[in-house]
Image 1 (cartoon, rainbow, N blue to C red):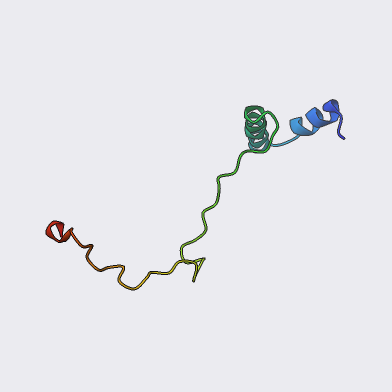
Image 2: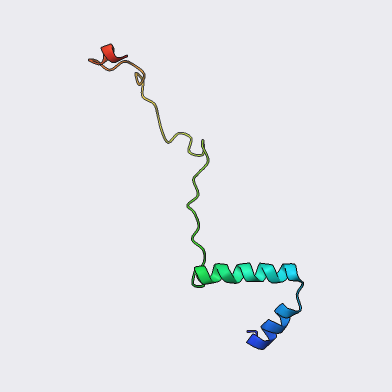
Length: 70
């Protein structure tokens, strides 16, 4: 584990662009209280479950009693 003094010394020796990256990371850590950021649930891509659903014969047939609405 790096001591605080050694860590600060290392950060001070970095170029300004890298210091900005570290500042952004520190802000992100403060917002999450050090925990990992919650990840969005990933949706499976379309067509990734072939054969799981089946369209029954007559699916598109008109529903009896609703002919006047079609």
